[in-house]
Amino acid sequence: MTARRESSARESAEHLGTEHTQLDVTDAESIERAAAALGERYGQIDVLVNNAGISIGGSNADDVKRTIAVNLIGAMAVTGAFRPILSKHASIVMVSSGLGELSCLSPARRREFEDPKLSRNRLVDLMQQFVKNVENGTPRSQGLVVFRLQCLEGRAQCLYAHPRPRARGYGRPR
Image (cartoon, rainbow, N blue to C red; front, side):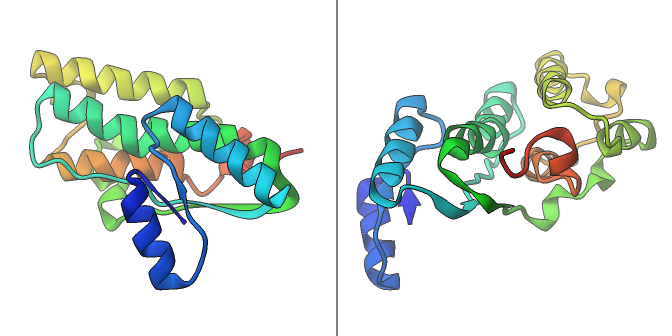
């Protein structure tokens, strides 16, 4: 069990009768410490569940950046840091919400996100483009129709949890 705050991790772990480790998905040092601690404690792990996520009630560029930092970049960073300690047949579970549906996108943009050849770098580029569009007040001009920030929050999670993650190198280690 992990959580951004040590006290939250401890309380949740006690409630579930398990162990805990502090992990803030927006802090590279915290991610590395958690991966090292779990590697030391268990050697390898069989399941990694990325469940961190936020929903900020605004729609300015700072809110969008913070949401992407937790829901997309954080999940990618945790997955990357934990890959060395995943067992050969480990599973990676990406938790998302119904807000991650691609229905908030224009048909053309939706096709781009559904493309099985969508790379990690291109995904990050698209999110950075979205931030720039929000800063300029023009998300609709790029086919990124967002009715509220929660839709974007889900989008970042959904994009990383695309149904074909192994095809793009996100799944089990080789």
